[in-house]
Image 1 (cartoon, rainbow, N blue to C red):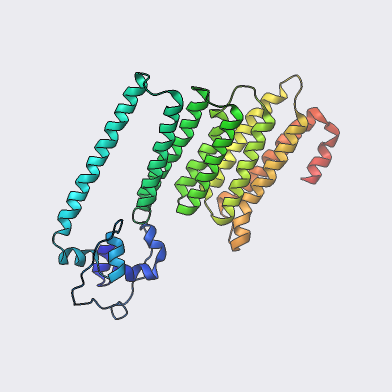
Image 2 (cartoon, rainbow, N blue to C red):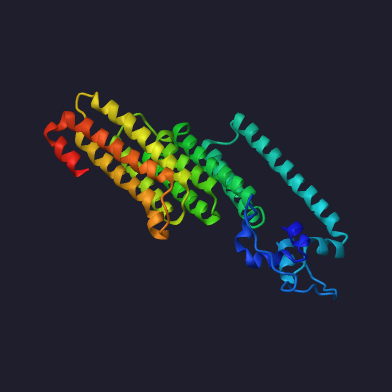
Length: 339
């Protein structure tokens, strides 16, 4: 941003005033509004002394005094030295963190740290990474989102290990904790406005049943959870038109439901009614997911949305006919007419 501001003889703050979304980071092929030179605020010639406060950033100082990054460094030749020294400090902190991590691993291998403490260390590590990401969010949005993704992954795997390997709590408790992690990650993806975080939240959400599975195969619990998850996707779709989220949630649901359905129909006592009810619920949700944003914004349907809507109807009709063939064949005509 500083290079762009220098090119047009304006300050980064002038550009941010016309392009508030640019504060989250520049994207390729994006369009910026550049103020005219006459409209940009004139650089103040007099020297101003500023005392740097704790946690204050260069960006904040540039914004406060309407100066460019280059002008600030030119007026403060020791600033480059400070940045260099500060960078060395950060590298030192990184080395310290790696050293502590190695020590913790060594302590675990030697059984110096018990299992609850290991889980606590995992959750604390995730929280610290999340804190670092929040600090970097304003100036390095894309980079901070990588940290957030790592923190969320740590949360998921830590709880999974605590349940499967250490047996620190039951399946219900692990299930509730992972649901909370999924809800939190969805909230973070909206807050950060980062599609990749929403994708991670979605993948983590669909992975939860497998991470806490005990092999009992309770389809009601599984599909109730998947339905709740997809309702969350429906709420997300209301605010964001992220096609990749719609596609992934649809594909994952179809795979899970389809695999269960064909296995269920081969059993001695198939769950016909449950198959129809959950199939119908998924059918309705994915209609909503793919139309709700267009209804809100009065936008046009994309080819992907139209494809999902068409395949959604086709697959539900096919599944319904297969189930009714064994359940109540006399209802197939009514089902066809109703759909």
